[in-house]
Length: 242
Ligand code: SF4
Image (cartoon, rainbow, N blue to C red; front, side, top):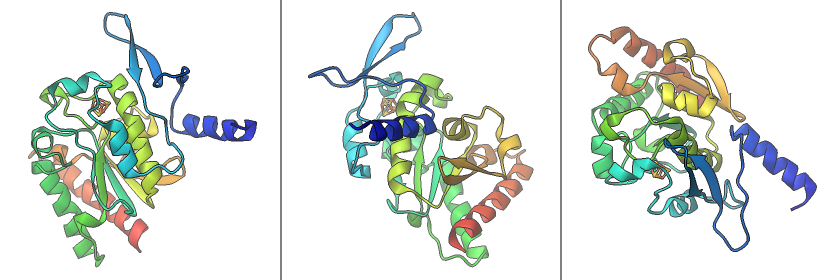
């Protein structure tokens, strides 16, 4: 690889938020060392990051029957993502829940039905011809965390590389991060959604809006948040489709 190409590649990884890189040993699959709870180094196989000519099919093939993090232990199905692979808008959630884990599709449970309603209802009210199938929807982690707990930082880092590749391949006009975990994975920001929502940020050079995760909006005492989420979505839809 030329020095110029190497510099570009390193800058690309830095923009993606990677602070460490692994080295491919001769005749070996790429590996990365991480530290487990009992501080014993664990070797994890990683695929090449953002390879040339990448595609959603190739990313799915690289994921394979993934066991790169502990979330594989309780999963039923890997939930890769669904929708238009050339979508102008991508929604990123946290991780699959029970329904998603069983069906292998993101956002198909109650929170998913609310998300569909929000996308299609807002689009209709705003005169934008858009259905759920026209956007792309995926999550930070592709396997269901036990008891729907928040993914751990190492799980987000390991699985996040697939999300970054998905976004790099689709290159949408905007990304909508649903909830604090997606905001943290994509922006590296630890503030709560209440502080981040409603404003534009960037993931690499792609505009990104943070809003509430639909599962938060299902709680009866969060009516204000519901109104705010609708406002955020309205902004995103007009930005992308006007
Ligand atoms: S969550 Fe991601 S990295 Fe972890 S096992 Fe599942 S697909 Fe692999």
